[in-house]
Image 1 (tube, one colour):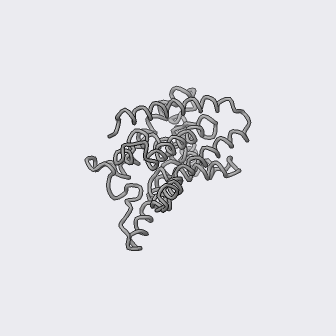
Image 2 (tube, rainbow, N blue to C red):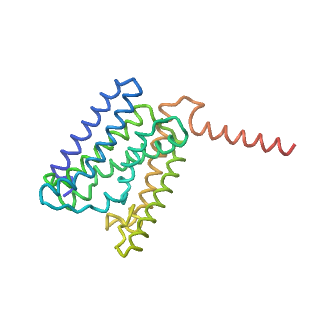
Image 3 (spheres, rainbow, N blue to C red):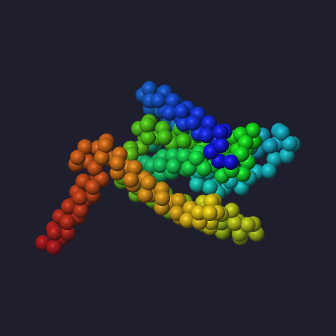
Length: 259
């Protein structure tokens, strides 16, 4: 049962530890050690995610690999691997890296928080004594630390303009989801409902499918980053100022061509 005592305690303890770790990491100034924090968070997340295979084998003598370990079936699976990729790419100044990092930082944070407050795997097996459930909770917590550190560590700035690469990333998620669903069906397997593109994980809320979740993410990120810029950015450097400047330059170019 969601939001029982165990679930609520995990949420509270996890968020307190996350805040404490980010505060401790704020004292790290050298870039190589910042990169090390990012790498460790990504690697630990992956190890936790795939650990069920070894735990199952050591406890039962057999091990069955779940589909979401072999393939990025779920949004958070993809974010987990992107966090590792971002951490280990040496050139963190390229435009390509920044686009992927922006999508990972926002997507991983939102995905981890959604899973923290609505872990459907806990709904089916409401016990942290089950390693499959516990490792899923822990891996989302470590991913949350890593993705938030991309903000607090100075890798990604919170800006409204980040919605552009984020929307680009969502298009990639859409493609991956449809490809995986088609691949399973082509191989004679039932569709995994990758990225929840075919139906919602919450039967009573059909809108809460992959498309609905993506739309809600975009709206939430726009509202959050808009408020953030009002609080953190001086006048003249906010998103609407840059948008007005862009239209002004475009108008000047158009006028120049007409002359």
